[in-house]
Length: 442
Ligand code: UGA
Image (cartoon, rainbow, N blue to C red; front, side, top):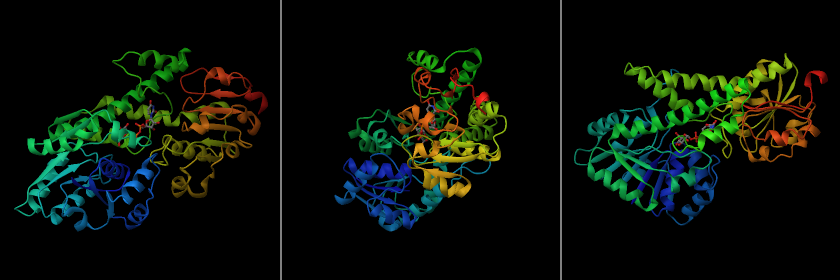
């Protein structure tokens, strides 16, 4: 099939490359000329494991091409995926202007019948508005079927998720369009759920909101564990063995970040409010998450009192490992709060520094060496569980830091291992390991 993907962001690019790899003829359009130039050279504008080799391969074998030209992208397509950004507005609602702009352009450009499929995360009812746009703007003799096809890719494992996802959701209002979409996905051998458009839109929000709820729930249990002397790792493990609960998203820490959970939870609260149904549970999930973000600095302050002039090593800028994305990363809250307290911050990250620099400029120091970040530091805060951090020999903290005091927001190390070193180790939902009494050394 001839497929066009509108938008070369995390979702659009993986979708385009994935369908090209699956043997379809794919055109990917983006309005940003510089981005298209980078992609045409076989490079990805952001880091996603495994994406660049597949991009290069499908560019060179002619399965995939890029353009900024709507005529080239839309006029001959059988299926058009809309995968443009849906950023958050100031009030927590979703900015749908890029979605509607894409729909108008498609309506004005198509020259044959087409299925237009929304991949971007959009509030329930959005596809009905997209349908209206086509009814009003498309050439009368052409048929446009609008389908909701939310995506469930995770940054950092998006390629695996594309080919080995848990399910494909297709929301359609007619059998013919649904069945073409089913045929498209059939070779991937992933279970397919066919439903109506509004339910498909809701499945996406409900899934992200539920996953976020699991995280905030386990974080609250972790906070309780600290107060009652239990260990969250043992608790998560014991809970996750129940198949009804499941092991995923029970990793306690300093909360969720990224471009999806924070935005989508707020958008669902908005959506519920709009239909006069306050979503109290989700409101609490968001509040708990905000509290978790502030835990590291609260804990550091508890230990040091004043942080003025204290040197902090911030380990991990990306919102999660295997990505250079810092959108809504917890590291940003920690840095902001540390700077407000007068701390001097050196941040380590293997790949997210360029993105962080665009936002934070020279307010902090940056390094791609953990040892450099730790050198002379009074304390370290772990914000992202990068493998480099998890596998760091623990005596590095002792050798390089002024004071080996580690606040681990992602529970990277076992308490037993930490107990062998003269390190003060504060983690989430687990007893503190105090092999040195920091107060004596300060
Ligand atoms: C999330 C969903 O997992 C995807 O299914 C969905 O497609 C995507 O949003 C989206 O809507 O586009 P993503 O944000 O890339 O994917 O990453 P996750 O792996 O879900 O992690 C999100 C945040 O939760 C990260 O900050 C991570 O550190 C945190 N997290 C995750 C925890 O704190 N604990 C956990 O147990 C799991």
